[in-house]
Length: 208
Image (tube, rainbow, N blue to C red; front, top):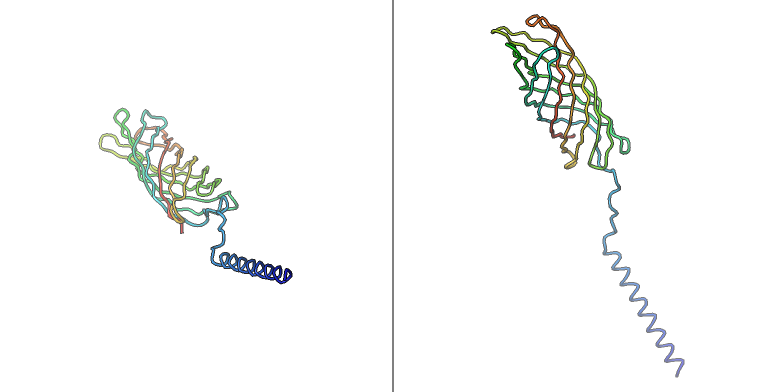
């Protein structure tokens, strides 16, 4: 009798374990698998982009007393390559500018300029810190007594920036750029004049 009772308890215990195991398996089957967080640095900067920018330009017309200042804004286009957290790219932009100043009876202005630059940066996921540098070009205009003379300058540009990814395709940036447009001769003043300017601008890019 004792053996029968013990055997019954054993059978009941085994049945309980089996039911518990089945319930646990059923819970695992109906529970979504654990999703590990995305690894650091998975935000992609790769590919082409276009954008707009707006900023303030503060300059100095060399060989003159003019300090042309004003707002500048324009368009940029570029392409990024990414290797790990390193980002390499090229970017070109064209700007319209209101920068101008009067020295003596002459008015100097820089109505437009542009750059074609390389970029190299380091990405902290959706934050990119970069340096940039390359070719600069732009126009200058001097007016005196109703007479105007315009010239085109070639030079260089370099700067630093930070860009933040807001979504998969959208990003915003803040950038400082130094633009040096080399001296060229002006008949109206009898001097060779160039333009050195600092540009602080904000921009938005759309990546394809």
